[in-house]
Length: 454
View (tube, one colour):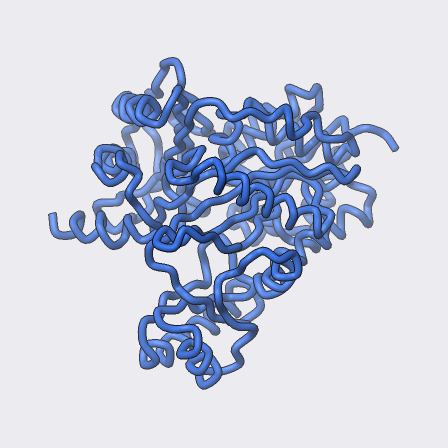
C-alpha cells in the first residue's frame, strides 16, 4: 500500500490553512476543495492546487459526499482530511472513502457511529466502569420524560441522541416547562440531525467542562496529551479554552486521562479524538459527557504545552504509521489560552458581521500564535460559521498567559467588520476569570445579564 502523497482538504477557513501547513511539514501535497465563495480564499492560494466543489451554500458543496469523492479521484488525491464540522463526523464519508480506496484522515466509521449517538456512547462508557451523568435511555413522549425527570431530579438537560456541537440541548427546571420544550426540541433535532430521539440527564449547575486529548493508532497504541478547560461557553458554544485546567489537580488529571484512554481503547480508536467530561465542582466528581471523533477547534492549546503537532499525527496515523510518541514522552510545560475571534457583535446580540476586512493588524510578540485564514481586503462570506481566527498565547504559568492574551487582544486591530475582540478583552479582565472561579453557566448567568443592562 502506497504512502499518502496528496491530501484533499474537505473544509474551509482556518482549519484548512492549518491542514495545509501540516501537509507541508510532512512533504505531502495539498488540494483545497473550495466552494464558489471560497475560490479566492487563503486556503485556495496556499494549497498546491484548488478545485471548486460547488455553489456557496455548504449543502451544495462542503456537505456533498459524492462531490468530495469525485474531487479526490479527479485530483489524484490519496486521502481526505475533513477538518471539523461539515462531514468530519459522518460515517458515510468514511465508508465512501473505503469504497474508492481513499484514506480518511480520521477514525473508522465504527468509531464515529459508536460515539456519534450519545445514548450508544453512554452504554459503551458504562461498560468500561466510567461514571456517566445520571439520566435515561430514549424518552418516547412527554409523560415518560416527566417521570424520568422527577426520578433523577430537576433541573435536567433534555438532549438529542444525535446532537453535537452544542446543539440539541435545553435546560428544563419544572415539569410544566418540560411539556413546553419536549415537542419543540424533538422537531428541531429531527430537522437538524435526521433523528428526533431525546433523552434526559441531570443538570449540574456548578460544572466545569473538561476534555482530554487522545491519540490512537492501528497498532493498539493510545496516549493522552493532558486536559483542556472549555468552561467559558455561550449556548454550549465554547469561546475561551485553556490548558491545563486551573482547577484540575494532579490526582484528578491522572484519573481523567486514564478514563479517556480506557474509553478509546475499548472501541479500538484510531486518530486524534477528544473525550469530554463534566466536572461537578461542588462534589469533586467527574462524569463522561461525549467523545468528539475529530480534530477540535481548540487543539492548539494542547499543541502549545506538549509540543505535539496533532494534525501531522492524524495524517501519519491515517498513513498506517504508529504514533510518534510514547506516553512517557509527553510532557506538559507552561500554560496556553485560546480566544475564538468571531465576526460578530456581542453588544448587539452576537449578530453576525460578514463583509470586507479593511484593516487587519495582528499581534507580533513572543508567546503568541494566530491561526487564521483572513487578511486585509478579505471578504467574509455570509454562508458559514463566523470564526475568523484563533488567538493563542502561551506562558510559563496562567497569570503570565493571561497578561500576554490581554496584550495580544489590545494589539489585534480589525476594521470593516465587527468582531468579538472587545468582548474577549472584557472577559480576560473579569476577576472571576482571573481567579479561575467560573462554571459552564458563568458567561450566561453572570456576564451577559450585566452586559445587557449596561
